[in-house]
Image (cartoon, rainbow, N blue to C red; front, side, top):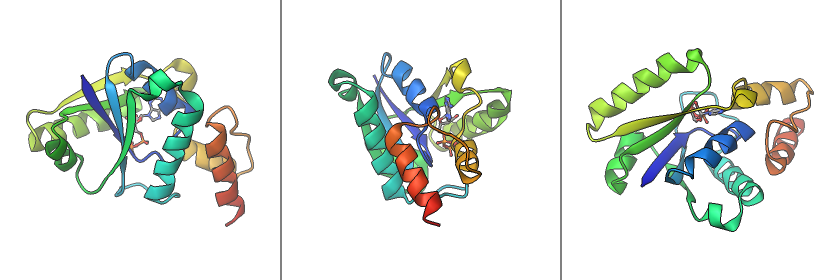
Length: 164
Ligand code: ADP
């Protein structure tokens, strides 16, 4: 079965990778990187896609990588899902605070595309506190993020923040 894991991935973290590890036991997963995002974005969509590719390359073995692909999508996720005929959305739930937003999103997506089904996987406890925005905040203030993101992402984050 195929599923689409959409997000901003600004940048991809070890929490996303942990979710993917468990997701590929169930699905062939397409990671769909949103070109448009309501959030304030640090990396361009090209950079975010490159980081997802680098993270997959350094984290997963060859047979696991066969279960994973990466795409960019522009505009509404459901438009992409309708075009590709992949109506399963995969999302992660970290804490109760994620729940309300994710529920709204799932209902909205179903209203726009009734065949769509959203599947939630629960984050591992050690990553439940981890978000892309916190990682950006920590590195901006000079903290150590080496246990939070894959090495290639850490390198790019340092270059981006220091280069500013
Ligand atoms: P979005 O802007 O769509 O929320 P994100 O890249 O922040 O994009 O997140 C994409 C998905 O990954 C969301 O479902 C989010 O809940 C999930 N996610 C983010 N961080 C983690 C984590 N640490 N563990 C598990 N899932 C996560």
